[in-house]
Length: 93
Figure 1 (cartoon, rainbow, N blue to C red):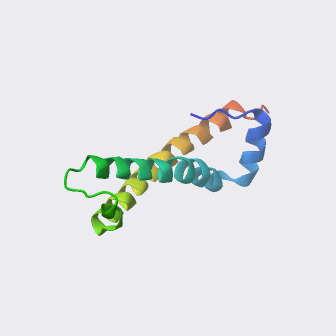
Figure 2 (cartoon, rainbow, N blue to C red):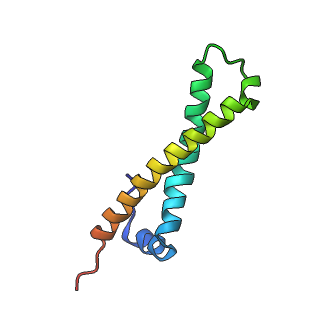
């Protein structure tokens, strides 16, 4: 979980929740983790001939699936983080 200062959070909050989810869920977690996992799976696959296998459709499908799964889980995590910060810096009446 990423912890933001009050000033940092105020700036992030004005940009909106959608942008926060995209930045921290998709770009910050989904794409990098999806690429790493897809590459690791391909490296461990005994039938794969690296690096030629990286241009085959089965790898591209695996890459898209991994990016989608990690983006979804990253968005769930980012949403939870958003809600934690909303409660943490909630304006008292």
